Image 1 (spheres, rainbow, N blue to C red):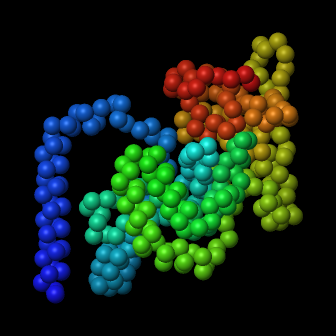
Image 2: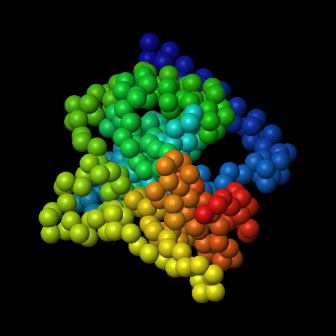
Image 3: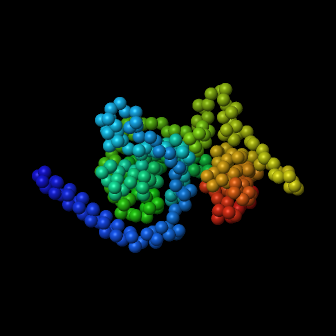
Length: 321
C-alpha cells in the first residue's frame, strides 16, 4: 500500500515537473509579449501592505527556529485602507488588519504563492471569515458595516468572483473555492467560536480617527472636542487665492478623505467643499490640488482616495466645484 502511495505521489511530481519545463521553454519566446505595457496593472489598485517579521531570531533554541521557519507563515498588515469595487459595491478593509494571504499549503507554494494571484481575493475573504461582515463605502464615501454575506459558502463564492475579476483565470479560482469547501471549515468555525467584535474603521495605521459615528460614544468626555474636530464636525475653512473676485469658503467633510489637507497616494490634496449641504449627497464635490503640477480641479467624494490629476496623470476630467 505504501509503495502505491509513493508511486502515485512520484507520478504527480514528475508530471508537474514536465509541465513546468514545457511552460519554461514557451516562456522564452514570449517574454516581450508577456511584459508589454498593455498587460500591466495600475499600482493604485493594489493594497499597501507591510510584512510582519517571522520570529526566528529570538527563539531560544535552534529547533525552535526550525519549527518557526517551517510552519509559521508570513503575515501582512494593511497600512492604508484597501478599497475594491466589485459588482457595484466598494468593499473596504480597514487599516491595521493583519492576514497571511491565501491559505495555500506550503508544499504547493512553488505553484501558487499565498500573495500571488489570490492576494486581493484572499485579503477580502480573510476579512469576511474573521468578522462575518465587511465595511463598504456608501454614496458619500463613508465606511458602513455590511452583513449581506453571512455564510462560509457566501464568502468562498465572493473569493471566486473577485478572483475572476482580478486575475481572469477561472479554473484557478474555482479550484481555490473547491479547496476552501474541503478545508476551510476549520478556519471558519474557529473565527465563529471567537466571535470577535469588528474593529472601528481606520484609513491608515497612524490615523486613530474613526469614520463611523457609532464609535463616538467610546471617546472619553475630556477628548470629545478633539474627536469632533477629527470627525469634521468643526469645519476647517480655506480661502481662495488672492485675486479672486469673490471670497469663497471651503469646508472639510466628515471622513478622512474629505478633510482639508488630506493627500492621497497620487499626491492629490483636498482643498475643501462649498456644497456639503447639497440635497443629493451624490452631488457633493471637492476642490483638489495636484501636488505635481499644481492643477486645481473638482472631484466627487467617493473618488478622492484614488483620484489622479486630469492634467498630468491622465485622471478623470474635472467636475464643478
